[in-house]
Image 1 (tube, one colour):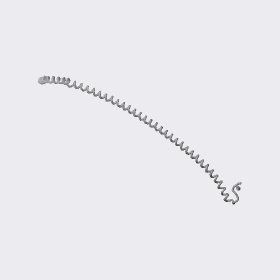
Image 2: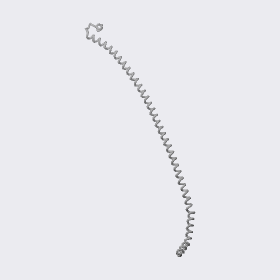
Image 3: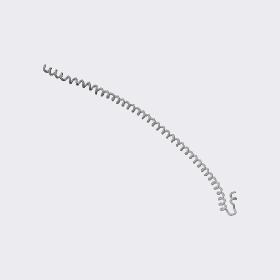
Image 4: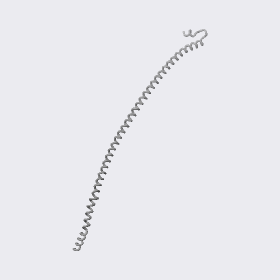
Length: 155
């Protein structure tokens, strides 16, 4: 057992420079590599999260602008439809006024034509009455003997 302990003590004594070099290597790694690497990673993380936050803010601003644009677009459409309806009402009113004017003009012409027809019918009745008297006297003169006049028969 002593021999094993002696061998073990020799091994430990031989490994001391390796252990010291290993500890020195770990400390050097921590100072030269790990700390700058941690610092760079922290800065990178900060930049990344900052960029993500900035992107989120940009997205929110873009969504707000989009909503405002859509609202303006809706308002413009409503205004266009209102203008269109107003114009259609105006055109309908103008058309109705024109139709009323044409109807009145037509009614005036029809009334005038009816008066002309009534006048013409009245003149035709008078003419027929005159002609019927003349025809009746001619017929009586033609039917009656030559010496009798139609005016004598009428009495």
